[in-house]
Length: 143
Image 1 (cartoon, helix red, strand yellow):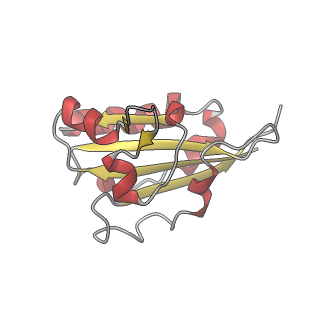
Image 2 (spheres, helix red, strand yellow):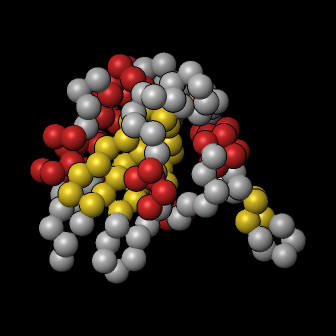
């Protein structure tokens, strides 16, 4: 199975601000209104069960986040961790928070498959209000 993890840098400086930025709204009829994050990235729909937000305000929290990605984020860290760019710590240093979104192309149904078609890491830095700072693709055996 093919997996993708996309990561965006944000300028949100508190947990409340970050949660509000990533959380969609709803109309009185229950229809979803895209979050500011989705509007900023051009994503029209995402499965919200596969999004994480992380406040990274100091070097220690950024280092802990990178270690979390390499050791605990994926169900198969042996296949995922080698794909995490060595420069990720530097890439996230400019942002007080990041948003991570997971997708896959399982034979049982895809999750957030639009992530596979995103521009490669770094190509949008400075061009979008919420730049894509990493896109990690890896494969595992389908069970």
